[in-house]
Image (cartoon, one colour):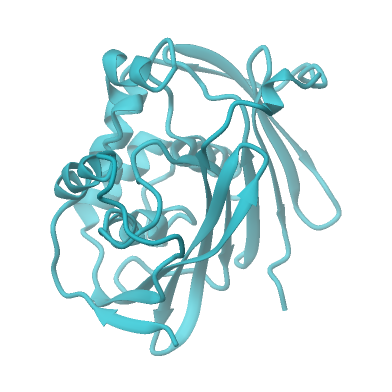
Length: 282
């Protein structure tokens, strides 16, 4: 049975990263299964100044409705607390965010208090290690208005790598985005995701990247910002994070309408992100 733990206030994400670093020490991790716990924070209100800064960093227009990716930011401290706990079976530092699916059931007004919940499910084998899902929800008066599912991979072997597979060449055309080095630190400041692979050359090199890389959720948010005004009130947006975007970079965004929504990509010399927008589940 899942234990529900009510959170009122907790340590910031910086404290969670410090705690997570201890999880890299051999012998401190306990167990091989995900904890049967759901963290809940009720009555979360949006800081309109913070929302405005987030909108500017990601390219959204300033408005009274939350961007689809913003509740992910609100729930992120809960996810950090969950994954940095001593009974979590995998070290949080070094996890790779491989995909994210968000369902907007209805527009969420920025002035509406939200009840947020986070839990981790489905720890499973992967050719390169193990992966699991973090499910976050936002509810209003008991009604779910938003859901996010983030899939994380813990690499434990180098025997298989999708990077070695032949990928189709990126399609021509699309909007050109020139991403400066500050893309990583700017998003870290508004998201709380201060993983050093996004903000530091040294931190990036420690995990095998030649330069800092853009946050995958920044890239997803920037794609939705590019489609702003052309999305329905309710939809599901699903993305897979491919090759990381090293900073600085120049990439191309290409979106194609479908019968029920959009298909879109972000490409450099290779695909960085593929995504689709369609109807939410019934």
